[in-house]
Length: 451
Image 1 (cartoon, rainbow, N blue to C red):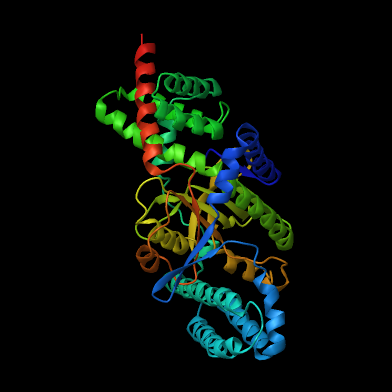
Image 2 (image 1 turned 135 degrees about the horizontal axis):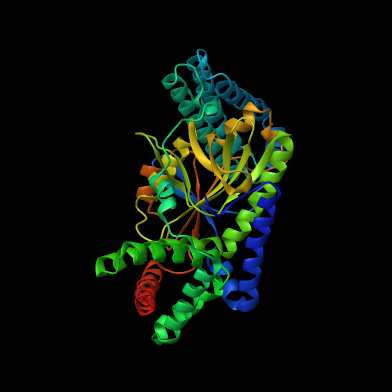
């Protein structure tokens, strides 16, 4: 699996991504500042039968619990009881699980009974706190239900500690058939990109100039494109339909690369890296951070084999027991958005009792049992209240030209699971136009170089 890093290398990789963003800022500070001001991340989530949104800021909502508890003494007891019930469910998913799950749901009901009394008080920030804890209750209840269901399927043998032996994905198996490429091959693609830009219309030149600000000559994306071009050349794929498919491939690759270089994405990923290091320290010896810049493959919710899980991600893993949990994930959509919330829902369920291929030392990918992050922390005794971190849930980032509709969110997202939406640096139509133009330019250059 390309694009993966582990341990200290993971921190270096995050630093490298930050350095790339700094280079963009130095090249065009006005462009970066415009994106920062106009593409502020928004947290989208389902509330009842509708969707709601919050600006994603440093809320410090856990700190409000102490203040509110002074006015409503029962709050601390209700919160502690709910977290205790959740801890019992995820630690004992077997025979006692139905009884424990009922108790967890009863604890959630006690919280909902308490909300009107909190609202009747005068404490500042009470609505923000209620919104946050509502999501906590919904998310952890969904995790508990899924954990119980997985335990039933495995007849009491937790799949979280026994990775499924699934076939490698087609994309991974096909790697052996892909011609080897070098950095020089990537540089040649970049030069083709520059030549095509110099011959383009003023409108296309402006689009390609923006891309060149974010993706310089040494960016790994050019080698990925060279790899695809080499595969097409080996297969003799120079027909118009094949070039059309190549353009669609380029649209996805360029969209993912631009997303990773987005100022807000870089900021959120760096914050996640700091959060991951704190959690690894609390989890103790044997745990490390893994950054994966490319797609991750994991077991499917239905059927056999592996399917793509995320476009980029940051994990905490333990090599000895081969277990892992995603702390930060990114999905990039440069085409249709209607399926994005449903895709997040499936990813959320695949994190409970599934398995994924993640890089180990040397860059080789191996199978790891995947856990929901909250479940993993509870099983390993990491107390949310004493963690010193505002949010211990997996952060799910969606980078797209526009947000999903309320209808798609209310139908697709599980209750309590949020998407942090960031507007992409280029609209869908512009990325598609550049991808089509570049695909034709690469075909032309390959044809001219053919003996």
